[in-house]
Length: 438
Ligand SMILES: Cc1c2[nH]c(c1CCC(=O)O)Cc1[nH]c(c(CCC(=O)O)c1C)Cc1[nH]c(c(CCC(=O)O)c1C)Cc1[nH]c(c(C)c1CCC(=O)O)C2
Image (cartoon, protein in one colour):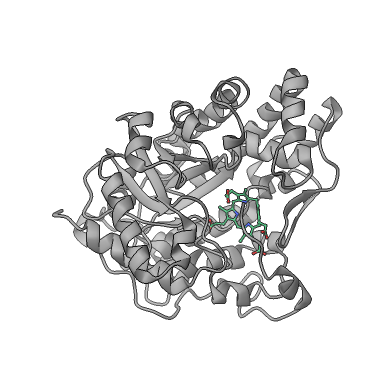
């Protein structure tokens, strides 16, 4: 579970001003140094063919140099549009495609192990808490200027190798009209929980026009991020269904399982609609420029492998297959999934996310040589002293070295009480300890 926030305090401060204004692109320049150049150069860039695009870039940034440290090469709009039509995404500039995160996703050699953190944007950062003062979680997800700024905050601070789009797994459900709120300290709460065939009508397919703020924020972000890839994400059908059926977070997922076992046809119909929505939400992010996606099936670990294969895998597999057609790498993650790792890999992941319970070498042998792994430092380790943190980082790196590709991450999201300085130090440690010849 994501941890509780000082949400009440936040809510009490409604009306507090935000440094930016709606509709005005927030300035991304922040404290701290720029991320060093790890790879790529102008020499890699395709020829500067498009003055219009360059103008937009210059307009979007102070120096025309994005946060990734290297200017994003201009691309030809004609071929961009053509490529989108065929693949559903824009062509990927070489300096981005050849960075350590995307190379590791493809199980290619890297100059250092890439690292990012689930929930790197959020409550561990004082600048996030300040920005969110008086603004509800869902409102912040629907304002492109806030989404952009919050996504960039951890990039400036920690110099991670990838950004994760700031949103929530329930955003596409709200966008198609489901009555739902994210309550601070609780999580998603549904006005009228799902339980009958009639409820299916509340889950119409998602259209890109339902989430214009996503398209806008992703577009701005990819310009700002330059060589740093942006990861889009969505919730997988089981985890989304759990919120809809339970009405909120649940420890046992008992009502969800009762529906799954007791009314399998209705269950499959529900998951089918959720898969359609998740797939569309991911493809909106990809079309706008996301370089990879993560499908969160956070609560799939509540199921046996047999039940996962019967009731869940086909639906997640459809989402991943539809996204796979765009060619972007797909990460598939859940918590408590030691027994499910092979089945989650088979659902169509290029990278399998692993929680802290399973050593990465074991996880890698379970998912096979055709998949990279992502993980898996216990988030609670970051609350211990620096010596302990360093020891665990080295252990995760050593274990990850057994896999054909490794992306360093936590085993679940950053805990809100984490000292952000420790996160920055972990990034440095991962880079230092994994540095190898290019
Ligand atoms: C299960 C799940 C949810 N949301 C998400 C998942 C899958 C990941 C996981 O397993 O943790 C996904 C998510 N939610 C959020 C992100 C942001 C991007 C990032 O990882 O940095 C991502 C990737 C922001 C958020 N999503 C939420 C917050 C906290 C709200 C706040 O800041 O006020 C953030 C920053 C709210 C949320 N939303 C959800 C929960 C359980 C909560 C926590 C409620 C609480 O404890 O307050 C549902």
